[in-house]
Amino acid sequence: MIRAKLQEEFGYTNPMEVPKLDKIVINMGVGEAAGDQKKLDAAVADLTLIAGQKPVRTRAKKAIAGFKIREGQAIGCKVTLRKARMFEFLDRLVTIALPRVRDFRGIPGNRGFDGRGNYALGLKEQIVFPEINYDKVDQVRGMDIVFVTTAKTDKEAKALLKAFDLPFVN
Image (tube, rainbow, N blue to C red):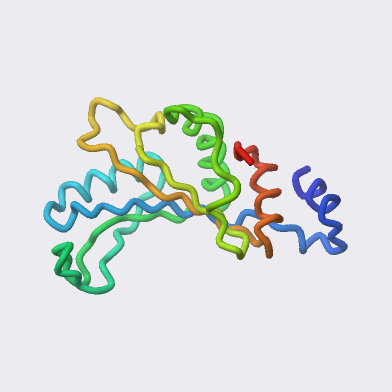
């Protein structure tokens, strides 16, 4: 249904030209993990509950003395969702998590696109997801959610994500 609508809107002749959602990457940068690994462990546990699969720890590419970070030190975690888990997460994000964001009017549609058909969205707190028990949260952490599509332009990507009911403001 989404595919047919996009094919008609953009006039694709080949059905393989129609853009599709390739993957969703959820990243949680935990800068405080430089001093306390327990904070990173808590972030990994939260992301596991949110995504439904175990995240991989991200490491610092180079040392930054100002942030007290050494090269190779674990400073965050990320998870890549594909296929069924990706669509299940997208459904939970749109129907449950985004409406629970404080003062939510929609996500900005004019920024967040990278020019190559990918969209990045930031959430300020992980407690908008129902899987996270509010009483057990040690600290409110934000996360980046990146929608990677096969779309060639931002316009095509926005139409695709709109078809998946992402609530764009403009």
